[in-house]
Image (cartoon, rainbow, N blue to C red; front, side, top):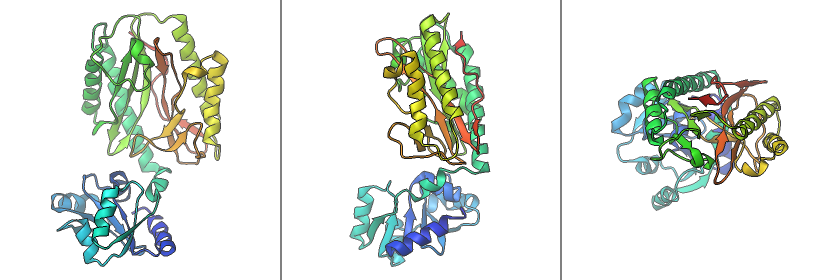
Length: 348
């Protein structure tokens, strides 16, 4: 069990006069217990915590949830809470309104505990960093193995399928998200997931990909080009990489994430491309592909030791083409670039 979980719950139980809190979000349950199944709950009253699951997962839970009390849900979580005479319970913000209403039907009053576990998850420990790094190595090996497959006339979807296959062959649980393979004028789509379009010569190909390893995600974007890039492509790529370097050099304890995003805007402005950049500079990565912190113009986050996040400036010219390069960074008093792939354009 995470050391400060009981302390945090104890304070909430006392402040809100609760009988306990119920953790339902899969990623949060896994963070606390190491349970990798799909049905599991953590109940905590501030003094003790228990992991709950149904018959399908009880054996798995007993193996994975070391040091946890494991109990079998015979008739579902609502009946378990009712049997325990729970009258007032704290729930995560991610819980559905339908679930809240079901508890009300059982006479159980629910109140929000916000993003209790997500706030804990922002700071990664040594084991989490190791899992993220392995996820990155798997994705990087798969990308390099996929490059020879990328040829003129190959469909974007075929490149996606090859890359996902290679990630799984290299040890991934699964892909971290729908792989983006966007070529030619489709590369101006920031989330241009792979289509049936056939890749042509002298086209930009943006590939955004990542693997999941033991629950932890990676996120990388690189640019591939069949042929010889023209000066505009090279200039945009220089601007993006320069923005990455300046953002990373500005990462320090307590820095406002809005300021880091402003660095990206400033660099792209020097090149005249700021109007072609409309998303955030980066986001946290861990048990989810998008988590805190957020590096954007509206972020309320500040950099803290132990955070892992992406840095991913891009330029997207509607009707033309787009480029994005993305690395993952760990802040351990100094920024550490976890991604090892070369940032240069990969020429085919």
